Amino acid sequence: MVRMKKHQKDGYSKKAKKDNYLARSVYKLMELDEKHRLFAPLKSGTLIEFGISPGSWIQYYQEKIGSSVTIIGIDQKPFKAEMRNGVVLTEDILELTAKGLRQHTRGDIVAVISDALPNLTGNRIRDQVNIANLRNAITELTLELLKEGGLFVMKTFYEPELDGWFKRMRKVFEKFYIEKPKASRKESPEVYIVGLGFKGNG
Ligand SMILES: C[S@@+](CC[C@H](N)C(=O)[O-])C[C@H]1O[C@@H](n2cnc3c(N)ncnc32)[C@H](O)[C@@H]1O
Image (cartoon, rainbow, N blue to C red; front, side, top):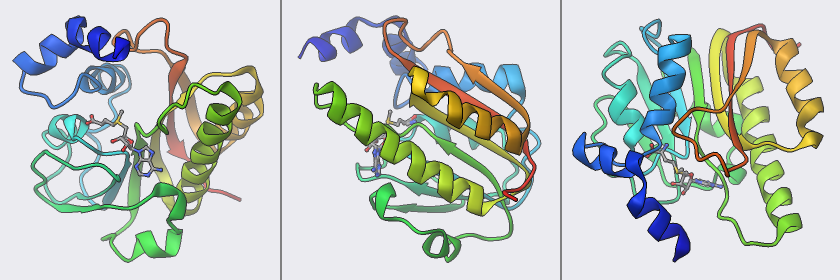
């Protein structure tokens, strides 16, 4: 309830409504894109988006990527945007396999982006475990699927134990950044990682 009120009052939520975006999260992606030029280079292949619903991110990047890029979105909640070229799978990310995902892809997987986060229970330990499980699942799928040179953007919660994971990510991307966009609430531990130029998983 407190959460709802915060959302309602939030300037980015109002702006999203005014700009016809389905969620305020779009402004985080927009800022990352303006800084790192994530989408303009994508002209073909497949982009996978974990946690795609309701769909504000796709509303934004669909206008930036080439029209022949296929989009595979995954979410358990309803997707409300328009998708020009691709499919939304109503599945639990934790249940996915790289082989299963490949059945839906067309050409190389040139980008993986994720705004997914488990519902928080309020129990710190349980939340940490759930977040780590989702992060690990998305990381492993990405490292297995992504084409060399590919892009990875992912939201997670910052915690000191993440240093090992950051180190691993730094190794497998030409460029690696940890970002806290302005539209991300200061009190939230969420951070976005941006990996550019995947070097391969070997
Ligand atoms: C913050 S929302 C994404 C908002 C989206 N970026 C947008 O702009 O509309 C996070 C999404 O992740 C999804 N999600 C979280 N954990 C998931 C899981 N294990 N499997 C599938 N979807 C999941 C939630 O259902 C939710 O829709």
